[in-house]
Each structure stands twice: as structure tokens, then as C-alpha cells.
Image (cartoon, rainbow, N blue to C red; front, side, top):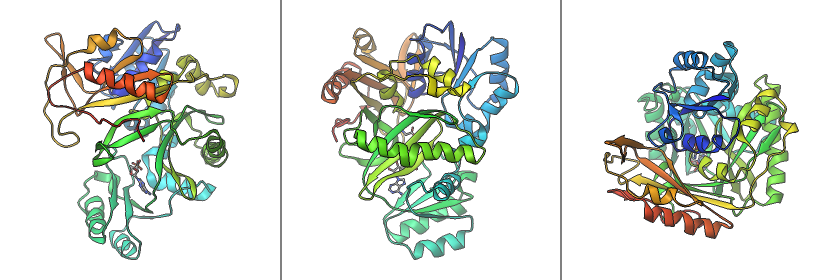
Length: 419
Ligand code: AMP
Ligand code: GLY
């Protein structure tokens, strides 16, 4: 089979790594990919949002299956565009990707179908939103309705912060049209767990659990980032909790989407929080998480192409998905200064040592090739995943990799997996 993957981050490198294990692959393309991906797949210089060009490429190159890694093209309707040309594609259609693309939509869905989540109100009128927050307890959470590169959530500890935040989102339009509506919700506390799942529109099969460290500095301090590291499995997500989530969250969500005429096919990501009052949904995403994919996919034993084909065909109930009873930890190597300003272009050394092991993987996120050498080219540069029999073993392995790989201004957290 000829397969095309759309996206360019560490998540896409992890998908490439897993797809390559399939005997079904003849040629694997990635658009646009990145420098690390170019060692494993044929990178095509088409951006993820150039949907017409991607469709044309798929037709010209006899692509049998296209996999969409990123959220933006999904929300923009890339799956519908491929299907309209009779092309096979893995991911939700536009009318289902809205579960990530609009927080107002996902909150309304949860309210309508009784899926546990934080209490909230939605506003498109600034004055009404201001009046509402003045009456609420603190802290309070503001969420721009649409996609905002993961930055559209503001947790406000004071009324002043809430009023400033509302102005930024609704008046100054810091996140563009994503801020035409705002969801204002109750602040919840508890540990966050990411459970990604495969869906075929009716059946949902959860993957192994993961936890993400979002803050830039050790001890969950510093600014929010795209994610500084992940580990799988979560220590607090017991079999009993998993069974309960299946009954109260996972299947109800997939059924609700089907009832609304928005069949969800693809990867549905449940961002959960274990609160004192039980598990609640913090967010949905319509794709693999980044960097969750970097710890979940290394634990998957079943052929990923087979699973994706069953999702597309609506026969997910017919395939058994097998997972290794092991653990994985991914430590992100970032450029010093991330998530704010940082420098690029530093040479990366030691990647060959990682390649020489069989229990370490270096997933590239922000790298480039310069004179035949890898250099830093982004905030999150690499994700070093260690796989071990237990979480403790995987932590030790991942940090061995972190020491082997080096570049100027390398920044990483020292407590990934330790929580
Ligand atoms: P989201 O983009 O919806 O995932 O939000 C980003 C992050 O903000 C989440 O991963 C949580 O850490 C935090 N967050 C979002 N909603 C809430 C909430 N209602 N209470 C507490 N923290 C939240
Ligand atoms: N790790 C969070 C996300 O992928 O949205």
C-alpha cells in the first residue's frame, strides 16, 4: 500500500515509526513532515492546510490510504475533501471534528447527553460575559470557542485576570475568530489523564492510558506548553476507573455523536480529570495527542494500518487490539526559552547512540538538516521515548537517552513520569 500521512510534529514521527512496522506498507509519504521524518518516509513539501494540493498528490501518486495527524485540516474538512474524490482517508469528517474545533459544541453535547464535565455557560456577547464572571467563584476558566494552537484556555485566579482575559479573547481577538464565543467554566482540581481511542462511528476501543506534563518547569511550575513529556500507563487509571469511563464517558460520547448525525471515525482523545466527584471530561481532541502518541504507539502490538482500515470500514468490533504490558516515558528536549522566545540552528549530537539501542526512540518535532547535520528548529525539538518493563525502568531509560542527545540551550524537565 502507498500511505500518505499529513502533519509535521513529534506525533507524526511516532505515527510514521509505527506505520513502518506494517508489512502492508510499500511507500510511506509524509506532508510536510520534518527533518527526522525524512529519514523514515518520503517528505512532500505540501503544507497540512493545502487540502486541494494534498488531494491532487494522493490521486497522482496512487495513495491507498491517507492518515490525518493534525487538528487544523480535520476541522477544516480535509476528510470530506478526500472522500469526495473517492479516496480512503483516516480521520473524522468536518461535522465530527467539531468536537475539538468548537468548545461550545462539545460542552453542549456533554450537557445534552449527561456526560460528566465542568459546569459552564457560553457567551457571544461581551457585556453578558462580564456580568456573568462578576457573579462566579474564583478561580474561573475562560476558553475561546475555536482552535487556538492549544493556547485558548485561561485560568483566572482573580476577577481582574478574568476581565482582562475576556477582553483579550472577545474584544482584542487575540485568538482571532476562535474568540467570537467564549466558554466560561468552573475550575476543577485533580490529576489529568489522557485516554485516546479508536472509533468507527459506533464502536470505541480505548488505547492504553497516558499522562502529560504541560508546564515548562519541574514540579508543574512555569508556563503552560504543548507538553514537556508523557508517560504510559497512568498510575491512577485503574481497571475499575477504565470500566466506569467506558460506561459514562467513552461509549456515551460516540453514541451521542452518532445520534447527532456526526458519526465519529478516527482517533477520539478524551482529556480527563479525576476529581473528588469522579472522572470528568476536560476536553476532546479529534486526533492523537502530542506527545501522548510518543508513549502510546510504542506499546501497540497490533498493525496500525489494520486498525485504521477497520475504523474506516465500520468493523472495529471485529479486530482485537493488543497492547504490550510494559511502560513508556517520553521526555521532550526543548529549546531554552520555550514556550516564549528561543533560538534555533544549534547542532544536535548523539542521535546515533539512541539509534544503536533497541529500547530508546528519538522522535523529531522541531529539527532541520543543515550541511547534512541535524540542527534545532523549533521550541519542542525532540521527544526521547524510553520503553521498559515498568514505569520506573522506562524513566531511567528515557533519561539515559536525554543525556546522550545534546545541543546548546537544551531544556528538559527532570521529573517526567514521577507523579
Ligand atoms: P484544554 O485546551 O481544554 O485542554 O485546556 C488546557 C488545560 O487547561 C487543561 O489540560 C487543563 O490543565 C486546564 N483546564 C482546562 N479546563 C479546566 C477546568 N475546568 N478546570 C481546571 N483546569 C482546566
Ligand atoms: N498533549 C495534548 C494534546 O495533544 O492536545
